[in-house]
Length: 95
Image (cartoon, rainbow, N blue to C red; front, side, top):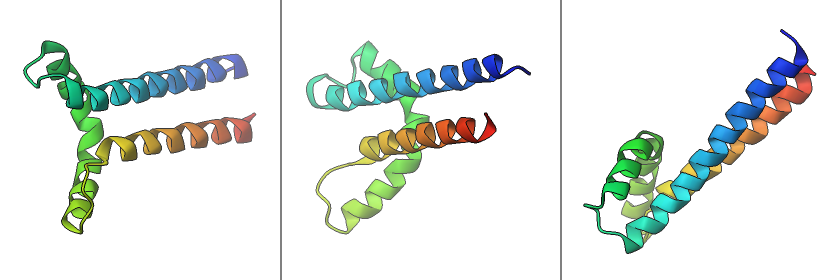
C-alpha cells in the first residue's frame, strides 16, 4: 500500500473524528437550549450516546464525589483529541 493511500486513510479518520467532536459540542449546547423531544436532539442523542456512554460512568462517579456538572461530553472530546494526536504520531512513525 502506498504512502499516499495510507495518508488518505489517516486523513479520513482524522476528519471523521473532527466531525464527531463538533457534533458532541453541538449536542452539549443543545442540552441547554433545545427540548429533548426535538427530532434533531433525538438523532444526535442516538448517534452520540455510544460515544458518550463510557464517559458518563466516569462523570457519575465524579458527581457522586461532589462535582456539580456532567462532564461526560468534555471527557469524550478530550479522548477524541488524544486519539487524533496518537494517530498522527503513529503516521509519523510509519512514514
